[in-house]
Image 1 (cartoon, rainbow, N blue to C red):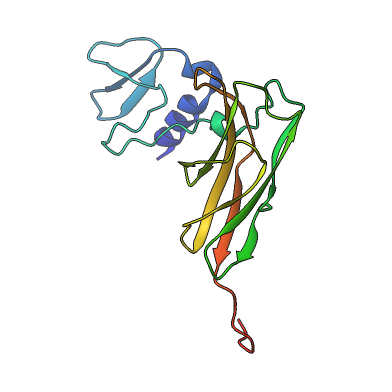
Image 2: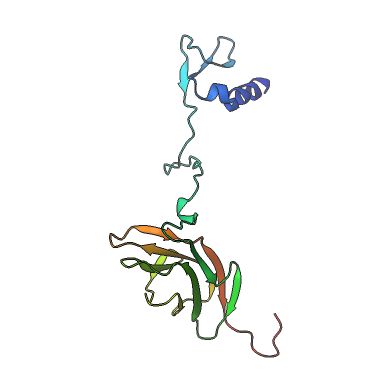
Length: 172
């Protein structure tokens, strides 16, 4: 058990992680680890594993697409719905309000993504309604694309909940 703890400490050491590691079993049956190869030793892979479908744990990476990007704009955000807001609508329609400063540059177009799927947006206004959303929790993010269809600006994502209105006299 002590050897396993020592091996774990060695592998966790930042100084050791970039070096080669070798493992072997001595004549007494003890497992040994070293940065120097020994007769019969096998090299141990100490690099972080990515999920390859065989159960290896993925290495977390930050999602750059969730980072707001202003690009050529001074301000770009989703004003409504607000983060974690519950919107109660009986028709499933979601009013959306964007803040954009300055107004849309010629050649650029707005795009709204709800749960990762693009929704067509009237280019004349930053105030519009999205129809056909299912009741439940959703995630919205707005993008601005240039003429080459590249994203030049994006808002932070906003999670919201679209629910049916509570009938009068019903407590939740």
